[in-house]
Amino acid sequence: MTDTMRTVRFREYGEPHDVLRLETTQVPEPGPGRIRVRVHAAGLAPADWALCRGLFAGDLPRGIGCDVSGTVDAIGEGVDGVAVGDVVFGTADWAHCPSAGAADQAVMNRWFPVPDGLDLVHAAALPMTVDTAFHHLSWLGLDAGRTILIHGAGSTIGFAAVQIALLRGMNVIATAGDPYAQQLRDLGAKVTAYGDGMVERVAELHPGPVDLVLDTAPTGGALPDLLRIAGGDTQRVLTISDFAAAKELGVRASFTEDLTRRDEVLPEFAQLAAEGRFTVPIAATFPLEEWESALTISQSGHARGKLLLLPGRDHAAA
Image 1 (tube, rainbow, N blue to C red):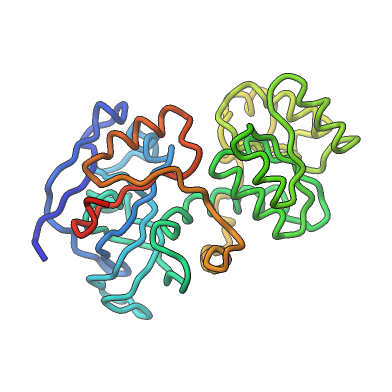
Image 2 (image 1 turned 90 degrees about the vertical axis):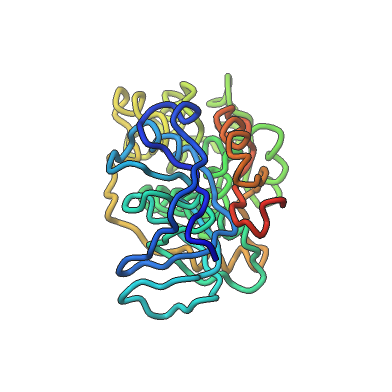
């Protein structure tokens, strides 16, 4: 094993294409309460591009790729229950380390065993998607028997949210385009298109206001209609994206919620994924050196699933 590694990171804030670089740097050491892995897969998300633009600003340089799967190769002080050679998934310590998951090796601050039957690419697709979907649903209320509209269910987070709500016994109406509409129906959701006439189409599926609305779509001006679908009750609507409209309308948004209220559900949904009962769609994987292609697809808004980098030198040609 060499003392240096490759990593994608930024040294100043700005647009991702302008500030991100593939660099060679020293392999980081895991501090207390941390482990280090040889990275198999690192999931990318819009949050990575927001970090590049200055979200949660901190010490630089800083890496991208918060979601990680890999093989443990070093263990920090005070860590037990894991051994070198174990295969794990979880989150990179992006806030306190000058590199993150988009690297040959990564320091992790949160990890779980990869269950039998779950491959490492699909394991790396889980953390941020499951966390975001589950916690927003929890803030709204994951109560069996209630009816929820999930807007933007063809997005990665929206698709996960539909599955989680159904697994918790909720009645789900989903708005989505053609690529995922039938898959969502097969899961058990009622599906309709977004866009003009959405309020009326939802009313045909569910007369009267729905109990809850989760907006997982990119900002697109739908929040007033979603509020109408909820009967005008601002507390029944929560958006993960359209913060400006949420403030104007008085509806709930991610940063208005109790961010300390978090249940640990990744092991549960990893096991469900291993059993074929839960999935995060994978759009494409890329060798680390092709990170710019992944960025371009992500920013196009048409990825149709999770994008992942495969950083490890042993599978750079995957």
